Length: 254
Image (tube, rainbow, N blue to C red):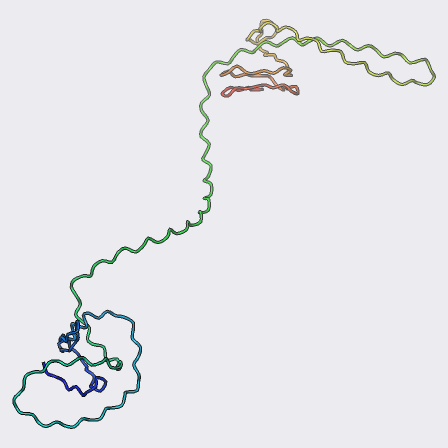
């Protein structure tokens, strides 16, 4: 390896350009001078932050030393490498070297990053509109049960007794005031239920033409379950009186 002139400062050397990785350079490793290539150094370099720019003004050029006498033509033994000089100031940034060859060996996979926090729940969507009401199913067929017999008509209760007549006013040429109406007598008890009538129509013998029924319902009544009823109208229902028709039964007024 050739020895370089020790009186030339690094900032005064020419800038190397178009490096191809085969150039040999001198380095200091563990206190010893070693040689390596520019490609090997490039392979070690990681892209770090750009260092501060060196001073733009070059230092003064040192005086040129005297030319030494020409030595004998016989090359003497190579002397030991002198101590490494101090690091000179940062020179201007050289041109970017050629891009190294792409490695075919993939680098190790980095560790998984921490799990990110759970995102907040999105707002609840609006309630959908109610669906249309389905069509009403067809009415089931009417049961084929026989028509029940017409129940007997109860006997009308007796009328309550008439209250006493108020006293007669004294004879006068002036008409006296009318006395107060006496209190209404108590309602008589309900008579016993009469015997069951014939289910056949009536009429002048031998006719069987007329079905007769009363015109006012005076007591609560419930039709027999699964039976229908028929009345000749009009029919009135007294206040507070209820006629109950079970589900599946019918009361027809003609």
